[in-house]
Length: 411
Image (spheres, rainbow, N blue to C red):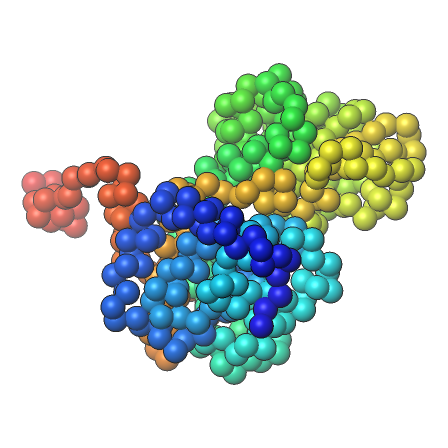
């Protein structure tokens, strides 16, 4: 048996599952192809993802393909309890909103103990646990996000990676859409739900200009904010400048920023030193997977008082007399204060997860124990299926054009 918050929420969870599934037809269409053959029959798939309505559609797809699913949450505060309740009627689930750190580790441990054959992860906590415990049942897996890919690459570098892992985040059909458009929209959904404040005219500081940062900065500008980008990479900083954003270091930006969003996957990109120089009423939020980007511990250690003033919004009084507002405890704001990425975006990411899980299970004996890219044929199917779901048709290159593209002669 798994462990969830309230089984009585299953009916509400089913409604949200059906809503998401109706907007994730590309994934559902792909999964339906495997309903008869059931290539994952008898296969245990260990899943560690944010337990959202979109994730429920991926779980549904795995079940359609015959898998037995064991599910834990990828973040202590991201679980939608109604979805966990619904999925617990179809799979084994260890997830509830508000898990303690100890609870979270226990839930991940339960999935490892279930001896999964394939692992689907977001952030690599499940991969790290399975590799450090040398779980022999695992034949291969997939990893969803930027931070997680970096972690499993570190396992590979240290010679501790015991099975092949497909880096979903490296797929164009993931990072160009999920990271950019999904995070861009859902981050401000979280900020708005937590604060209910006007974005137009605000000075928004985006720390990091990778694909997530690009999406957040673009959405902030679309909401008529004045946007500054903070970067350590000179090329990304130059790109942000030529994209029309102000570019500054965190010391400069801290003095005038009103809303800060971290998008780096790196530790302490907003330090307590930067926070001390912020204006009264500054809002801090994080769009990265882990709660390390803002140095919350140092802020809390120095705080004169901390009080919750709205759901997911804490007012922190500093020794210098200023107040700052921390959203979602410094955890990923789009999932703590909102519902995460829209289903239309997640259908691409999760179609990659679904097909890559099938691929790694079928081919594990031929694959090296390394971090691998999503095969091009999977990416093409995901893109074409998504286009069809949107009612979009495109041209195909002619034989003459294909020949010309491979020739050095201008004929």
